Amino acid sequence: MTEKGLADVVAAQTRISDIDGKLGKLWYAGYSIDDLAENSTFEEVFFLLHNNRLPTPAELDELTEQMVDYRETTQFLTELMPTLAEQTSPMSMLRTGISAASAYDPDGWDNSPEAVYRKAIRITSLIPTLIAHYDRHRRDLPVVEPNQKLPHAANFLYMLSGEEPTQEAATGFDVLFILYADHTMNASTFTARVVASTLADIHSGVVAAIAALKGPLHGGANELAMRMLEEIGSPDRVERFVADLFARGEKIMGFGHRVYRTVDDPRATILKRLSKEMGELAGEPIWYEISEKVDEVVRRDKGLRPNVDFYAGSFLHYLGLATDLFTPVFAASRAAGWTAHIREQYADNRIIRPDSEYIGPRDRTYRPIEERTGEETPA
Ligand code: COA
Image (cartoon, rainbow, N blue to C red; front, side):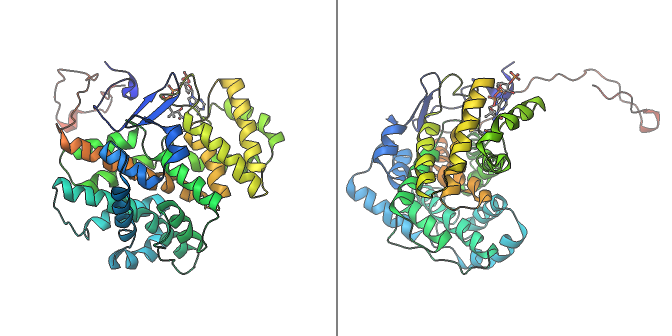
């Protein structure tokens, strides 16, 4: 019997990313996340995850042009969006939106490697547009069409607010996109690979991944971390809040990780710095200060460390995003990793079909319905 939650089970071989949980290191195709966050862009990282090498200038130009072209949404989604904005949560909108986009992909049901790569670029390019249009609709504001001159992450902020972001906001958001882009065999990526392994189409794999990311134990944590900071309200209330939470036996959102158990998540270290900087620039350091205090108390009392989602909460708040858009932002970035993993799965596929261990009763006697008392239900 394997560990509950498939802990330590190697589910696939990959060239896309690697983690050393003991050293607190993350690499994309052999490049350290610190180097990429410092020097790279999301567009370049998308190319890296998909091609296992960094692009040449011409390759990056070509990809950037494609990503700009593919930001545009279709008439069907434009018409659907007011209803989605009124009736669904942002993650449900995204799940439906990507599913709907599959019907209008210019490559149709072509599953050739070239078509699947184009679809990967289209899906990743479109997600920010869907989120921004959804958010503008629900705020009764006119939608903002993509700005072709802006990079992927900066354009996302522009479509949300209608204003070109500051250099600091644009760069910081791009770094967050790099940090969230992939993370080995996390629950949503595994889900995407399972779906791909049946040879279902790439949109189905991404829709399933979005569904897996929706849960609070995975992508939902950044949003819940921010809501917790708001509930705490001030650094001097942290000790009491955390003590009460643990006394009730509840989990603290944005802390703990399956892989980083003894050292810090390298992404959290970078996001902590970004949150501090943006808090100072926004003249509203309080959310960072509460975060820092929570970090100190939880480490001291439980030995738990913040994961990527904890400081992402206050950082995204400083960028002016609505709290319920934090997980969709995670999806927008992780689409790069999901689609890369789906393509890797297609390239060397065997259907993912694990075994299970039966622990129920055996050799039972079938009784007609009128003789059953219901007491035979096993514990
Ligand atoms: N708050 C309180 N206790 C926590 C905790 C948290 N955030 N995360 C882990 N623990 C405790 C567990 O309850 C467990 O305690 P026990 O040994 O007394 O049962 C112990 O630490 C070990 O954790 P474990 O349950 O093995 O972690 P996991 O690998 O199964 O789960 C997470 C990893 C991320 C799902 C888990 O840490 C969690 O739920 N964190 C909060 C949600 C979150 O931030 N998710 C984003 C992940 S990037």
